[in-house]
Image (cartoon, rainbow, N blue to C red; front, side, top):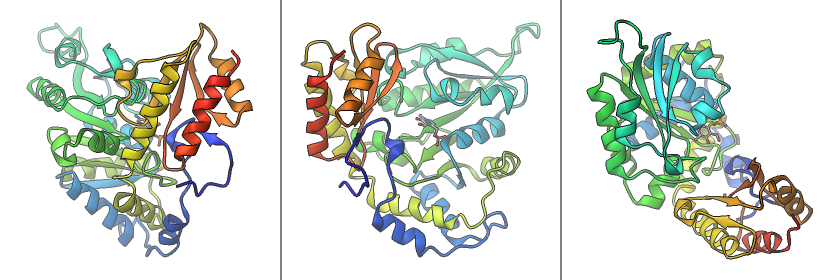
Length: 349
Ligand SMILES: Cc1ncc(COP(=O)(O)O)c(C=O)c1O
Protein backbone atom coordinates (compact mmCIF):
# COMPACT_ATOMS: atom_id res chain seq x y z
CA UNK A 1 0.00 0.00 0.00
CA UNK A 2 1.44 3.40 -0.84
CA UNK A 3 -1.39 5.94 -0.32
CA UNK A 4 1.29 8.48 0.32
CA UNK A 5 1.70 11.91 -1.25
CA UNK A 6 5.44 11.65 -1.90
CA UNK A 7 7.68 9.68 -4.21
CA UNK A 8 10.40 9.46 -1.57
CA UNK A 9 11.03 6.19 0.27
CA UNK A 10 10.84 7.40 3.85
CA UNK A 11 12.43 4.81 6.15
CA UNK A 12 13.31 7.19 9.00
CA UNK A 13 10.67 5.70 11.28
CA UNK A 14 7.29 3.97 11.33
CA UNK A 15 6.03 7.20 12.92
CA UNK A 16 6.01 8.87 9.48
CA UNK A 17 2.92 6.93 8.40
CA UNK A 18 -0.01 9.07 7.36
CA UNK A 19 -3.66 8.13 7.86
CA UNK A 20 -4.92 6.41 4.73
CA UNK A 21 -8.16 7.51 3.02
CA UNK A 22 -10.02 4.63 4.70
CA UNK A 23 -8.70 5.60 8.12
CA UNK A 24 -9.55 9.27 7.50
CA UNK A 25 -13.09 8.23 6.60
CA UNK A 26 -13.71 6.53 9.94
CA UNK A 27 -12.08 9.47 11.75
CA UNK A 28 -14.39 11.93 10.00
CA UNK A 29 -17.43 9.82 10.83
CA UNK A 30 -16.50 9.18 14.48
CA UNK A 31 -19.10 9.79 17.15
CA UNK A 32 -17.54 12.08 19.74
CA UNK A 33 -18.22 13.52 23.18
CA UNK A 34 -16.00 15.26 25.70
CA UNK A 35 -13.44 12.80 26.98
CA UNK A 36 -12.46 15.03 29.91
CA UNK A 37 -16.06 14.53 31.10
CA UNK A 38 -15.59 10.85 30.20
CA UNK A 39 -18.41 10.72 27.68
CA UNK A 40 -16.68 10.32 24.33
CA UNK A 41 -18.11 6.99 23.12
CA UNK A 42 -15.34 6.31 20.61
CA UNK A 43 -12.60 6.82 23.20
CA UNK A 44 -14.50 4.56 25.59
CA UNK A 45 -14.81 1.91 22.89
CA UNK A 46 -11.11 2.02 22.08
CA UNK A 47 -10.13 1.81 25.75
CA UNK A 48 -12.50 -1.12 26.36
CA UNK A 49 -11.35 -3.00 23.28
CA UNK A 50 -7.65 -2.74 24.01
CA UNK A 51 -8.13 -3.62 27.69
CA UNK A 52 -10.04 -6.72 26.60
CA UNK A 53 -7.44 -7.68 24.00
CA UNK A 54 -4.74 -7.54 26.67
CA UNK A 55 -6.81 -9.28 29.36
CA UNK A 56 -6.64 -6.29 31.73
CA UNK A 57 -9.34 -4.28 33.49
CA UNK A 58 -8.94 -0.80 32.04
CA UNK A 59 -7.12 1.48 29.60
CA UNK A 60 -6.46 5.19 29.20
CA UNK A 61 -6.10 7.00 25.86
CA UNK A 62 -3.20 9.49 25.88
CA UNK A 63 -1.66 11.69 23.17
CA UNK A 64 1.76 9.99 22.92
CA UNK A 65 3.92 7.06 23.94
CA UNK A 66 6.08 9.42 25.95
CA UNK A 67 3.08 10.57 27.99
CA UNK A 68 1.91 7.00 28.43
CA UNK A 69 5.28 5.99 29.90
CA UNK A 70 5.36 9.19 31.98
CA UNK A 71 1.96 8.60 33.61
CA UNK A 72 2.84 4.93 34.10
CA UNK A 73 6.00 5.89 36.01
CA UNK A 74 4.23 8.68 37.92
CA UNK A 75 1.38 6.38 38.95
CA UNK A 76 3.65 3.61 40.23
CA UNK A 77 6.43 5.49 42.03
CA UNK A 78 6.93 8.23 44.60
CA UNK A 79 9.58 10.98 44.40
CA UNK A 80 12.87 9.52 45.62
CA UNK A 81 12.12 6.05 44.24
CA UNK A 82 14.30 4.38 41.64
CA UNK A 83 13.32 2.65 38.40
CA UNK A 84 15.28 -0.03 36.55
CA UNK A 85 15.50 -0.11 32.77
CA UNK A 86 17.86 -0.87 29.89
CA UNK A 87 20.59 1.62 29.06
CA UNK A 88 19.24 1.98 25.53
CA UNK A 89 15.55 2.08 26.41
CA UNK A 90 13.34 4.85 25.06
CA UNK A 91 12.41 5.85 28.62
CA UNK A 92 16.07 6.54 29.43
CA UNK A 93 17.35 7.80 26.09
CA UNK A 94 14.58 9.73 24.42
CA UNK A 95 12.00 10.99 26.89
CA UNK A 96 13.86 14.12 27.96
CA UNK A 97 14.62 12.77 31.43
CA UNK A 98 10.91 12.82 32.30
CA UNK A 99 11.33 10.06 34.91
CA UNK A 100 13.52 12.49 36.90
CA UNK A 101 11.61 15.73 36.30
CA UNK A 102 7.99 14.56 36.39
CA UNK A 103 8.32 11.64 38.82
CA UNK A 104 11.42 12.59 40.83
CA UNK A 105 12.93 9.15 40.26
CA UNK A 106 16.53 8.09 39.89
CA UNK A 107 17.34 5.34 37.40
CA UNK A 108 19.42 2.17 37.57
CA UNK A 109 20.55 1.04 34.13
CA UNK A 110 21.01 -2.49 32.85
CA UNK A 111 23.19 -3.48 29.88
CA UNK A 112 22.34 -6.31 27.51
CA UNK A 113 22.58 -7.28 23.85
CA UNK A 114 19.87 -6.18 21.46
CA UNK A 115 18.38 -3.80 24.03
CA UNK A 116 17.27 -6.65 26.25
CA UNK A 117 17.77 -7.22 29.97
CA UNK A 118 18.31 -10.57 31.68
CA UNK A 119 16.34 -11.38 34.87
CA UNK A 120 19.66 -11.77 36.73
CA UNK A 121 20.85 -8.30 35.69
CA UNK A 122 17.50 -6.82 36.69
CA UNK A 123 17.80 -8.50 40.09
CA UNK A 124 21.32 -7.06 40.51
CA UNK A 125 20.16 -3.56 39.54
CA UNK A 126 17.40 -3.42 42.15
CA UNK A 127 18.30 -1.38 45.24
CA UNK A 128 16.03 -1.29 48.28
CA UNK A 129 16.15 0.98 51.31
CA UNK A 130 15.79 -1.92 53.72
CA UNK A 131 19.15 -3.22 54.89
CA UNK A 132 21.07 -0.23 53.50
CA UNK A 133 20.98 2.01 56.59
CA UNK A 134 18.94 4.35 54.41
CA UNK A 135 21.75 4.71 51.88
CA UNK A 136 19.89 3.32 48.87
CA UNK A 137 16.84 4.66 47.09
CA UNK A 138 13.75 2.44 46.97
CA UNK A 139 13.38 0.66 43.64
CA UNK A 140 9.68 0.33 42.90
CA UNK A 141 9.35 -0.09 39.12
CA UNK A 142 10.98 -2.21 36.42
CA UNK A 143 10.48 -0.98 32.83
CA UNK A 144 10.86 -3.44 29.95
CA UNK A 145 10.67 -2.47 26.24
CA UNK A 146 9.25 -4.93 23.69
CA UNK A 147 10.05 -4.70 20.87
CA UNK A 148 13.33 -3.10 21.91
CA UNK A 149 13.71 -0.18 19.51
CA UNK A 150 17.41 0.65 19.80
CA UNK A 151 18.03 -3.08 20.23
CA UNK A 152 17.10 -3.36 16.54
CA UNK A 153 13.38 -4.05 16.95
CA UNK A 154 14.25 -7.26 18.79
CA UNK A 155 11.76 -9.39 20.73
CA UNK A 156 12.07 -10.78 24.23
CA UNK A 157 11.64 -14.51 24.78
CA UNK A 158 8.40 -14.97 26.72
CA UNK A 159 10.23 -16.87 29.48
CA UNK A 160 12.62 -13.95 29.96
CA UNK A 161 9.80 -11.42 30.30
CA UNK A 162 7.94 -13.70 32.70
CA UNK A 163 11.11 -14.10 34.78
CA UNK A 164 11.74 -10.33 34.85
CA UNK A 165 8.18 -9.76 36.12
CA UNK A 166 8.77 -12.44 38.74
CA UNK A 167 11.98 -10.68 39.85
CA UNK A 168 10.09 -7.37 39.99
CA UNK A 169 7.21 -8.70 42.06
CA UNK A 170 9.35 -10.75 44.43
CA UNK A 171 11.26 -7.54 45.21
CA UNK A 172 8.11 -5.54 45.88
CA UNK A 173 8.39 -3.69 42.56
CA UNK A 174 5.82 -3.26 39.81
CA UNK A 175 6.50 -4.13 36.16
CA UNK A 176 5.77 -1.76 33.25
CA UNK A 177 6.01 -2.75 29.60
CA UNK A 178 6.81 -0.05 27.04
CA UNK A 179 5.04 -1.87 24.24
CA UNK A 180 5.14 1.01 21.77
CA UNK A 181 5.47 -1.75 19.15
CA UNK A 182 3.82 -4.58 21.08
CA UNK A 183 1.88 -5.81 18.06
CA UNK A 184 5.08 -6.11 16.02
CA UNK A 185 6.28 -8.49 18.74
CA UNK A 186 2.94 -10.32 18.81
CA UNK A 187 2.81 -10.83 15.04
CA UNK A 188 6.47 -11.86 14.74
CA UNK A 189 6.48 -14.25 17.71
CA UNK A 190 2.99 -15.69 17.33
CA UNK A 191 2.46 -15.26 21.10
CA UNK A 192 -1.04 -14.05 22.00
CA UNK A 193 -1.05 -10.40 23.15
CA UNK A 194 -2.80 -11.12 26.47
CA UNK A 195 -0.37 -13.93 27.23
CA UNK A 196 2.61 -11.76 26.34
CA UNK A 197 1.65 -9.02 28.82
CA UNK A 198 0.06 -11.28 31.45
CA UNK A 199 2.48 -10.55 34.29
CA UNK A 200 2.94 -6.82 33.66
CA UNK A 201 1.10 -4.33 35.86
CA UNK A 202 0.94 -1.68 33.14
CA UNK A 203 1.46 -1.75 29.39
CA UNK A 204 1.85 1.18 27.00
CA UNK A 205 0.96 0.73 23.33
CA UNK A 206 1.32 3.24 20.48
CA UNK A 207 -1.14 3.55 17.59
CA UNK A 208 0.99 6.13 15.80
CA UNK A 209 3.84 3.82 14.79
CA UNK A 210 3.48 0.66 12.70
CA UNK A 211 -0.29 0.66 13.27
CA UNK A 212 -0.55 3.78 11.13
CA UNK A 213 -2.70 6.16 13.22
CA UNK A 214 -1.71 9.84 13.28
CA UNK A 215 -1.79 10.27 17.08
CA UNK A 216 -2.37 8.29 20.23
CA UNK A 217 -1.24 5.69 22.72
CA UNK A 218 -2.93 3.79 25.53
CA UNK A 219 -1.87 2.80 28.99
CA UNK A 220 -3.45 -0.49 30.07
CA UNK A 221 -3.64 -2.04 33.54
CA UNK A 222 -5.93 -2.73 36.47
CA UNK A 223 -8.73 -0.29 37.25
CA UNK A 224 -7.03 1.25 40.29
CA UNK A 225 -3.80 2.10 38.49
CA UNK A 226 -5.64 3.48 35.46
CA UNK A 227 -7.72 5.70 37.77
CA UNK A 228 -4.46 7.01 39.24
CA UNK A 229 -3.01 7.51 35.75
CA UNK A 230 -6.14 9.47 34.79
CA UNK A 231 -5.28 12.13 37.36
CA UNK A 232 -1.67 12.43 36.18
CA UNK A 233 -2.76 12.58 32.53
CA UNK A 234 -4.86 15.61 33.46
CA UNK A 235 -1.99 17.25 35.31
CA UNK A 236 0.45 16.60 32.43
CA UNK A 237 -1.99 18.32 30.05
CA UNK A 238 -3.08 15.18 28.26
CA UNK A 239 -6.84 15.44 28.81
CA UNK A 240 -8.37 15.75 25.34
CA UNK A 241 -11.93 16.75 24.48
CA UNK A 242 -13.43 15.42 21.20
CA UNK A 243 -10.69 12.80 21.11
CA UNK A 244 -12.99 10.24 19.48
CA UNK A 245 -11.76 11.53 16.12
CA UNK A 246 -8.32 10.20 17.10
CA UNK A 247 -9.56 7.10 18.91
CA UNK A 248 -11.43 6.10 15.73
CA UNK A 249 -8.06 5.86 13.99
CA UNK A 250 -6.87 3.59 16.80
CA UNK A 251 -9.90 1.31 16.41
CA UNK A 252 -9.37 1.21 12.64
CA UNK A 253 -5.72 0.30 13.22
CA UNK A 254 -6.61 -2.55 15.59
CA UNK A 255 -9.06 -3.95 13.05
CA UNK A 256 -6.99 -3.52 9.91
CA UNK A 257 -3.30 -2.96 10.54
CA UNK A 258 -2.08 -5.65 12.93
CA UNK A 259 -1.76 -8.73 10.71
CA UNK A 260 -0.15 -6.72 7.92
CA UNK A 261 2.85 -5.91 10.17
CA UNK A 262 4.22 -9.27 8.95
CA UNK A 263 4.74 -7.63 5.54
CA UNK A 264 6.90 -4.93 7.13
CA UNK A 265 8.94 -7.61 8.90
CA UNK A 266 9.52 -9.52 5.65
CA UNK A 267 10.66 -6.35 3.84
CA UNK A 268 12.97 -5.44 6.72
CA UNK A 269 14.60 -8.86 6.50
CA UNK A 270 15.02 -8.56 2.72
CA UNK A 271 16.64 -5.14 3.06
CA UNK A 272 18.85 -6.36 5.92
CA UNK A 273 20.11 -9.41 4.06
CA UNK A 274 20.76 -7.46 0.86
CA UNK A 275 22.64 -4.63 2.60
CA UNK A 276 24.61 -7.04 4.79
CA UNK A 277 25.89 -8.79 1.67
CA UNK A 278 27.29 -5.52 0.25
CA UNK A 279 30.87 -4.34 0.85
CA UNK A 280 31.17 -1.57 3.41
CA UNK A 281 28.07 -2.38 5.46
CA UNK A 282 27.15 -4.85 8.13
CA UNK A 283 23.85 -5.73 9.73
CA UNK A 284 23.44 -7.90 12.82
CA UNK A 285 20.88 -10.16 11.17
CA UNK A 286 19.98 -11.82 14.46
CA UNK A 287 18.59 -8.52 15.72
CA UNK A 288 16.37 -8.04 12.67
CA UNK A 289 13.27 -9.65 14.14
CA UNK A 290 10.58 -7.11 13.22
CA UNK A 291 10.43 -3.93 11.10
CA UNK A 292 13.80 -2.29 11.81
CA UNK A 293 17.21 -2.53 10.19
CA UNK A 294 20.26 -1.04 11.90
CA UNK A 295 23.14 -0.78 9.44
CA UNK A 296 26.77 -0.26 10.50
CA UNK A 297 28.80 1.59 7.90
CA UNK A 298 32.34 2.90 7.48
CA UNK A 299 33.73 4.48 10.70
CA UNK A 300 32.13 7.93 11.07
CA UNK A 301 30.29 7.52 7.76
CA UNK A 302 26.66 7.64 8.91
CA UNK A 303 26.01 11.27 8.00
CA UNK A 304 27.47 10.91 4.55
CA UNK A 305 25.47 7.73 4.00
CA UNK A 306 22.24 9.47 5.01
CA UNK A 307 23.03 12.32 2.60
CA UNK A 308 23.88 9.99 -0.28
CA UNK A 309 20.73 7.90 0.22
CA UNK A 310 18.66 11.10 0.45
CA UNK A 311 20.03 12.25 -2.91
CA UNK A 312 18.60 9.02 -4.31
CA UNK A 313 15.19 9.63 -2.70
CA UNK A 314 15.63 7.30 0.27
CA UNK A 315 15.44 8.72 3.80
CA UNK A 316 16.98 6.99 6.83
CA UNK A 317 18.19 8.23 10.24
CA UNK A 318 21.77 8.38 11.49
CA UNK A 319 21.56 7.27 15.10
CA UNK A 320 25.27 7.08 15.87
CA UNK A 321 28.42 8.10 13.99
CA UNK A 322 28.63 4.81 12.14
CA UNK A 323 25.08 3.50 12.42
CA UNK A 324 21.93 4.30 10.50
CA UNK A 325 18.41 2.97 10.98
CA UNK A 326 15.84 2.07 8.34
CA UNK A 327 12.29 1.21 9.41
CA UNK A 328 9.59 -0.50 7.35
CA UNK A 329 5.95 0.59 7.60
CA UNK A 330 2.65 0.47 5.78
CA UNK A 331 3.53 2.93 3.01
CA UNK A 332 6.56 0.92 1.89
CA UNK A 333 6.07 -1.46 -1.03
CA UNK A 334 8.28 -4.17 -2.53
CA UNK A 335 9.32 -1.67 -5.22
CA UNK A 336 10.31 0.84 -2.53
CA UNK A 337 12.38 -1.87 -0.87
CA UNK A 338 14.13 -2.52 -4.20
CA UNK A 339 14.80 1.22 -4.51
CA UNK A 340 16.28 1.31 -1.02
CA UNK A 341 18.52 -1.69 -1.75
CA UNK A 342 19.74 -0.06 -4.97
CA UNK A 343 20.39 3.21 -3.14
CA UNK A 344 22.62 1.45 -0.58
CA UNK A 345 24.47 -0.22 -3.45
CA UNK A 346 25.06 3.12 -5.17
CA UNK A 347 25.74 5.24 -2.06
CA UNK A 348 28.99 7.18 -1.88
CA UNK A 349 30.50 7.40 1.58
C1 LIG B 1 9.95 2.14 22.33
C2 LIG B 1 9.31 3.50 22.30
N1 LIG B 1 8.65 3.92 23.37
C3 LIG B 1 8.04 5.12 23.41
C4 LIG B 1 8.07 5.96 22.32
C5 LIG B 1 7.43 7.32 22.42
O1 LIG B 1 6.38 7.52 21.57
P1 LIG B 1 5.93 9.02 21.14
O2 LIG B 1 6.85 9.42 20.04
O3 LIG B 1 4.52 8.83 20.72
O4 LIG B 1 6.05 9.89 22.33
C6 LIG B 1 8.76 5.56 21.16
C7 LIG B 1 8.81 6.45 19.97
O5 LIG B 1 9.39 6.15 18.97
C8 LIG B 1 9.40 4.30 21.16
O6 LIG B 1 10.09 3.87 20.09
